[in-house]
Image 1 (spheres, one colour):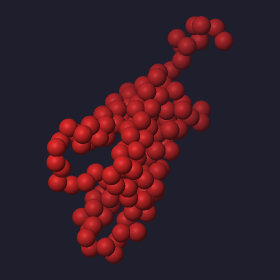
Image 2 (cartoon, rainbow, N blue to C red; image 1 turned 135 degrees about the vertical axis):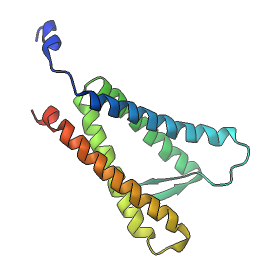
Image 3 (tube, rainbow, N blue to C red; image 1 turned 60 degrees about the vertical axis):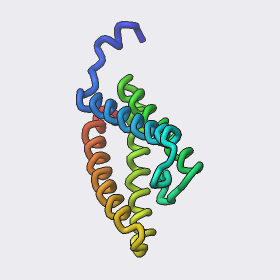
Length: 145
């Protein structure tokens, strides 16, 4: 492959670049959530995170949030660099979010103490499905062709 082949390669759509910026912002928000817990002397609510439908609290939640932030930054770097692994990682992460929210909703649906969190998980799950469909529609030609 000659060095000039990369110059004639088609650029990725601009909206995927915007998606990469949004992924970086989301990862930054997760990182800020972790850092703010260290700065604030007393927090009214404990830190928690959801992964594969399981709810984590305290140190385990910090590890889950750190892993999610690293995944978000990796997605942003991969898509910004126009690498296919960035799109595959985005698909895997969004599929995990959809499955995780669905599992959390079904597991905690009967618990009235976390009713508002279940409703929030429902809204997040719906938006994650829409985002996953958008990502599939925009990236299908890049990955399969």
